Length: 296
Image (cartoon, rainbow, N blue to C red):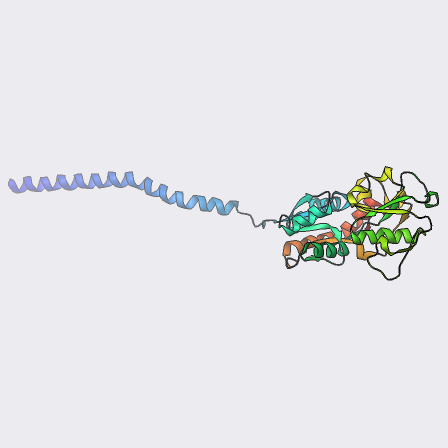
């Protein structure tokens, strides 16, 4: 009898232990499965949602509003997305702020100036810039007046304003010379008012900042103005100018500029390539009708 009772006890204990193990295992399994699912599912979801589209390269570019700002806006909307370039356009209303921002690293490149202006500005402010060539477009300098319809009507001792930076002053003086109002010393570059050797009408030349040319136009007899300021004022160089600079002066064409040493930056090279695109040239021809000239 004792042997039978002992065996029964062991049998009950064994059955109880087995049941407890089964209950414990059944409670634990969902937690273990849940842990596995937690680790696997997010990565599976991430993999499913991941695209192969590369991130766009961001670049900050300084411009003057017209025409450079409008041209770059065309590039930003129509060409840059496909090229993977995210262009932030930073607009300045004067040349000094634009180059100061470049020097200080506020922008990566700018698009508003020609090479002679860039070189002169760099020398005066003790830093080097790099200009991409061939250039993008030419803003021809013209002679404008609110008072006279023809250069023949310009009176003796007329007050004439020209830009105060050396390169654009030279351009305006050359247009005055080609119009027969003055004669300059030969082979002087850049020429200044001091290089005038003949002045048949004894015109009075005053150098002023380029941005002041249009606001002061009603108060003067004649003004030599670069094309960007003319377009910004809603005028057209080819139609409203009394005389205009030759389109052959491509040294004064506007281009992309950056700090020396950054010209190999892939973003800036891509920007330049987009601005040289044939679609940009056609946009310039269509929109500006000769007031801005694309460079071949």
